[in-house]
Amino acid sequence: MKILVLEDNERLCKLIASALEKENYKVDMFFDGEEALAVLANGYHCFILDINVPSIDGISILETIRMYHSIIPVIIISSNHELDKIQASYEVGCDDYLKKPFFMYELIQKVKKLCNFGFKTLDLGDSFIYNYTSKYLSSLDGEVKLAKKEILFLELLARDIHRVVSFEEIEEYVWEGEATTLINIRALVKRLRKKIPEKAITIVKGMGYSLNSNQCKLQK
Image 1: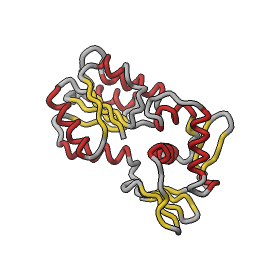
Image 2: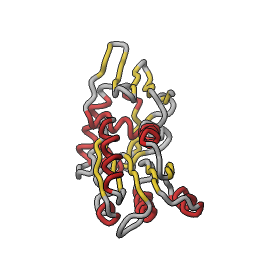
Image 3: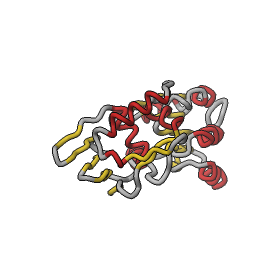
Image 4: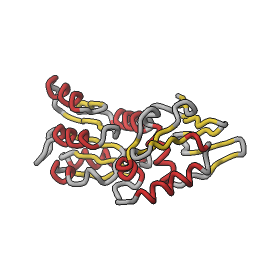
């Protein structure tokens, strides 16, 4: 899972990156808002943004993120404790706001909660259970091996079982910012459907894919 961290205090930024990397997250660090803005489409699964950074402030970057990515978690970190800044962050669409100074443990827990949706398992029906913590899919016959893109695709759909995920979102999240084609996306879905109950994934013609909410259940 890839995370973008924007923080102009280089020491703090490196501390955050180090803590996240110990939890097996991949981290890209930026100290300047304009540099971060240029790479927003590089397939990040979470954004951690400071408000007061050079060139372009964190709230402006948050606005840009929400224009294109409605479901990717964004955490604002700031030494600014003014109510209007906190309100503005939530109104624009941040998922959480952390005031400096903070405990690194607190930030890590927020990232885990947002990126893992607060759920432990996804029941796909017919005794197929996906475990978020271990990235393990089991069936009555034992473990079902999943490739990285199959895991990312499954977790993307599970963010909101009742929502159709567009081809563009799949390209960004599953291919992590690299360009792909509809043929590749359809081939991925075809491979995954052979490993799970076929009716677990619903195709919405011309729009994208979703999980079958009548069959799939998230469990804490």
